[in-house]
Amino acid sequence: MKGIIYTVLVLLLLAVVGVVTCPDKQAHYDEIEQVLREVVNEELNGSAESEEDMSILGEWLSSSSVKLVLNQSLSVDNYFVCSVGKVTFDGEVYPISVGVFNHVFTPSKEKIRTQLNESLDSLFE
Image (cartoon, rainbow, N blue to C red):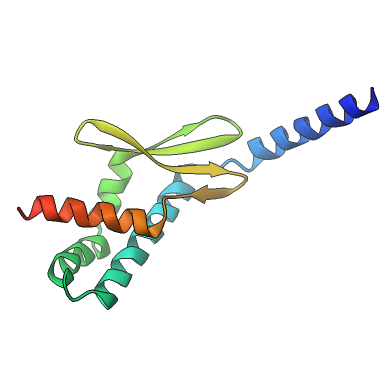
């Protein structure tokens, strides 16, 4: 019986901590923006093949337009113990981040790099 009570108390404590530390929209925004900037900087420093495409993207990311686009397209669904960041693009909604215990998880840099390169390729065709 004590084991059940302790288990319930631990789960209740985890739920309370999850609610208190659930990341808000600004935390998702900051993390996504940071990852995007890191990916673009790495591409600009390391790849001569896509230098022109990435320099255009780098200029765009360094401008205030990225903030405007991200603010308009990013929405965050709060599920009390966690939150999910979603981006709306061409009428489709894509989950891009998950926040739990005051940390926001985003896709890996490699996945973001691949998606950016695909988007740029289709943009310049």
